[in-house]
Image (cartoon, rainbow, N blue to C red; front, side, top):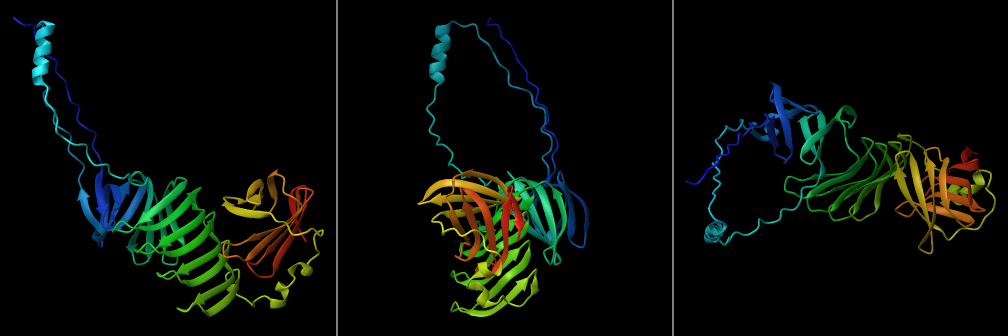
Length: 366
């Protein structure tokens, strides 16, 4: 008689899970309903509570029940000679005619969804690898009312329900930083803006779906500062206003644009440099990368008060001009003996706004 060994396995039931709510815009939220009133459900997640309109929920998937314990298959160990086992194995070999599963493109790891719990509030739900990690709630005017969870650093994307790219933005330290772009369902650029530590900083532009500029404005620390212009279908300006700290102000004297440096004591006279510069916004300032004839030669980092934090490489003597992306003069950096000695800051394309000299890397306003 063949000796037989029976091996049994016990299957443990899975841990209970929260319900999964699939919204009409494709977002997935895991949690449980803790309250409901006037068609609005309060859903508790591991990262905080969300208020969701019942009408926005396409499907609610209940947590799967624990799996039943099933007897394991019996394993029989035979003492038959190796030759018999080999023959039996060869007879049981089958040629598989199955084909590999099609490759599915990976889902972006960092995404976010916009939800409107009511006509007066808007929520942004941030998602990492399909799991909600944080929410931001804003009022109708765009002011932040409540923030829950922790938004990780990285570039987040938002998509239309049909699948097209809707918004791209970068988060750093829980706030928007760098370029934000929004797109029409057709894929055409709709909005282009720049942020620094969560506040609009620099040009803000709106486009029509056929690529024409519709409106442009200049911001500093989330306030309108500079010209705000609106354009007609023919590309001509139909209205323009000048702002200072988010308030209408008298436009600068056009004559001041001719020679802005004469309004303040001039820095030591140095020729205009052939150096070009690329500016990158940082959480606490800006990074300037310098190139000469297309070759990298150095970089400098300034904080928000324009103090020199660090400088690397060798920048030849002269005045390096910094322009906005649309070609307007924004700054002039003066180098002498390879050192930064002065900085002039302009309203984009406008008059001189401030001038600084440097003492022990500290910016001193003149």
